Length: 243
Image (cartoon, rainbow, N blue to C red; front, side, top):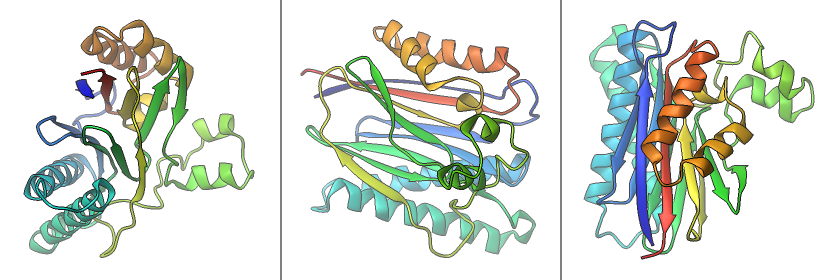
């Protein structure tokens, strides 16, 4: 299976800094998005530290016999330790952390790791499916049927996370593994996209621009910004094709 990818990150219309970060490392089959928190410099540092730690860790494990999910578990734990170590060295950074959503591909399998409210989607046979469950207070309320999904979009606490990297000594990433099919597209994104753009619109854009993934990324970011752009916006698209 061959993979094509594209990515784009944008500061948005209302923020003074971009706390999002993405990484494309096709040589090791890794694609990720991280959305930092903790204010300007701290959030940006947290997402960058996490992304680099995951890339470095997976490069060190390239010849290991571990499964894809085991490698991602180890890499997310390493990223968590990296952020905590930075806070110990610079106490002023206390409170910083980041989301993380990453896919790791081998020739016949794709694994997913997820912490926070950045999302992963699979577009297959013209339909889109969300692969991740948001680790957020509002998402928990929706899952308990205490509020509707419509109410969740405008909820004042929609950015409060229940799980993130760099917040506690131990972190539990949600892990999954899939068998990809030719024509599949995986979309990884921060909540700056999903706060303004619906799942169906993501699907329609990727399908319409499946031969130009850079254009798809640009269209999605522009759409989020046109609707307010009140957060940083990051999107990564990975398309699976026959050898």
